[in-house]
Image 1 (cartoon, rainbow over the protein chains, first blue to last red):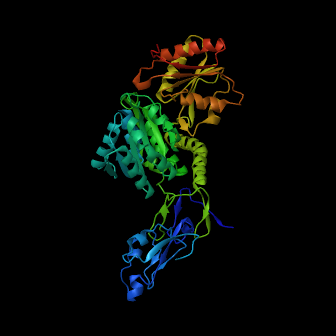
Image 2: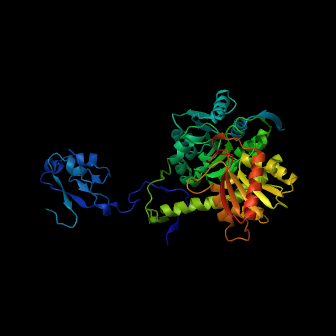
Image 3: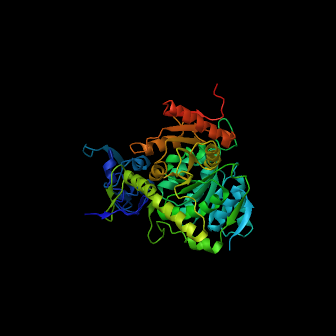
Length: 97
Length: 401
């Protein structure tokens, strides 16, 4: 049994997943080709434009770069911004290339 | 100790807001409210009121400033009229939906097109469904007292309150007004405590997008959806009646004056015909009732003080003995009739009150309303009812071809 909502006006607290699993909204997912991705190739912190541009903050600036698909809404901004075109948007329900 | 001064309705409202210790005022001038905003700025600039006066570029922004200031815990005040109120419309919904106890004076005026600067109540009546509580005043004393009462009501039910009074008829007319003692007002009106305390230690996003369904948040609380939030606002207005009456009673105890709670009555005890109206036109109707009684017609008056929440129980009680009811309204719902007439009939539907209700549209755009015209209209309605005409909308003192 969940707790009762006593607030008289709408509000939410900043927390991961506060608005539910927003990855459900996605129709296409970003798939990274690590043979083209700059940090993977150079094995050092570089580029990370996908991390910088992601409006949802779901890209982790790791080596290799990771995208949290639980909350990625599939907007495709990362694919658009990627200089070596290492990210492709793949329609959900179809296999990775 | 209290003292009596001669003042306009605008001055009375400004004294009420000053005594209420408002902390932020944001307003944009519009006739006939300009003087009220001017007095507030003089009070603040002259050091008589410790508050922030925010000069804005529009009424929409005036309400936005009020919303922000009220959210962070300030007692706020603004005033507007006519098209200025219409320009606020979107933010009126926001203030109510965010449950902010803002008090605003609406100095009632007709709306354009065609342009008018004169009095009627089309402006505030057309904001009926914004979720604001609406209280209408009949004289300058009631304006001052109602502004103070409005803060107490608003801050208890967390709903914004519109204190409405007729432009020029009250706003620019001088009357003796008893000014309550400042210390007594402070005691009557405890400091404002917002329903949500904002703090960097407990950050939150207020009024985010809500989805059609309810949802569980990360702390396991099943949060309300949009519809539950609407219901909470509806229930708050529905329950405000008791608070309004309790506040008027408490005010009477301290200051020796009461204004009727939801509505006031004049010689209704033995009345066969009841005249009803909102604001100053209902005061005029009391003179008409006297005239009718001199001619042997047992007339009484019910003045609607609170229009939202609608005083349904109160009108049923006040009108229980009426044989005929005539409403006088300074506003109209195009394509139907006066809004008060509709609401009154709806409140009486299915009850033991079977009296026919006739509606009169009067005084639009400052058209003079005389007591004898009201009395004549009542006599004409009584004759029509005698002939079996149960429904009628009359445009009083208006050339209709």
